[in-house]
Each structure stands twice: as structure tokens, then as C-alpha cells.
Length: 183
Figure 1 (cartoon, rainbow, N blue to C red):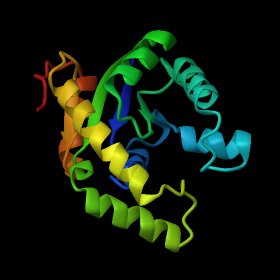
Figure 2 (cartoon, rainbow, N blue to C red):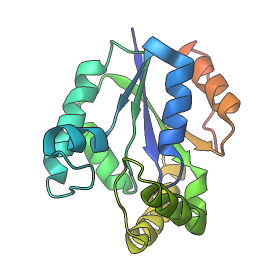
Figure 3 (cartoon, rainbow, N blue to C red):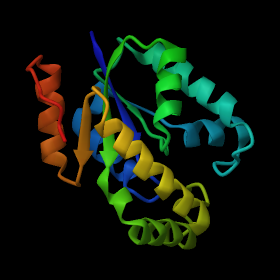
Figure 4 (spheres, rainbow, N blue to C red):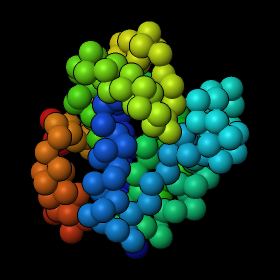
């Protein structure tokens, strides 16, 4: 079985976890979520501990490598906002998966994302406690990453909260239909 790796590109509060929940519900046993925050929670006991970033991403890469060929959909759920780091991550892990980059368009609305993060923290959600100034920095990096992705020859999908459109895109891709770059 050929696996499809969906790599999110989006800032904190852009809806990556919401999308993960929808995809997981839809694709069920054909879906695997790999998330550095979950690895931090398991290995370090603290989802907000950013002190071992390289190690955490190495573990995520190992999990993705092991999952390729065993799941139809692998969802790499991380705050990926550096195109060069994403490309280095993929080269390092020599993945045998097709890759589609899912650009979370809510990332374009910095205020919305900051409000979502603050609301989650205030409501005690089990999430990384990302300060507003870090979300601002992520936003600047996201804008550069989005531009680089759009200028690449890679398969990208601009996710604008239309779940049905994304599912159709994924299913057509898995069925082997030729799909033009989606921008």
C-alpha cells in the first residue's frame, strides 16, 4: 500500500488539530496522526517543553518512516513554518510516501489564531501554551513558508475549512487520478 503523508503548514491556533479530528473520524483505521506535541507529552511529560526539539522531530521522523506503507493517510500534525526545515526533514527520513502539503489558511488571520490559543489555554485544553508573541513570529515565518511552497513544484492544498473539498482531493489522489497543483 502506498501511503499519503499530509504535512500541515500552519501556526498555532490555525485549526490543525480540528482538521486532524475530522480526518481521523472520516478515514478511521486508514489514518495515523503523528504529532510532536504527543511525543513531548509521552517522553517529556510536558506538551509545552520545547527543550528537546531536534530529538522530538527525529522520533516523529522515525514514526512516519515506520508508518509508510501501513496506513493510507499519515498526518504530520506540527507547526511547520519553515520550508527549508520541512524539506530537510523529508530528505533526512527518506520517506517512501507521497506528500501533500496542507496549508492552513486560517494562519493568514493572526488575531483569530491568537484568540483561539488564548481561549484554549484559559479553558485548560491540553495544548502547548504558546505566548501571543511566539504566534506572531510563527505568522511571519508562515507567510514566507507559504510563498516558498506555492513557488515549488510540490503538491500543495490550500485548506480553507472546506473539509469535503479536501477529502475529495485526497480520495482522487489515492485513486491515482492526475491532479494539478492546487493553488
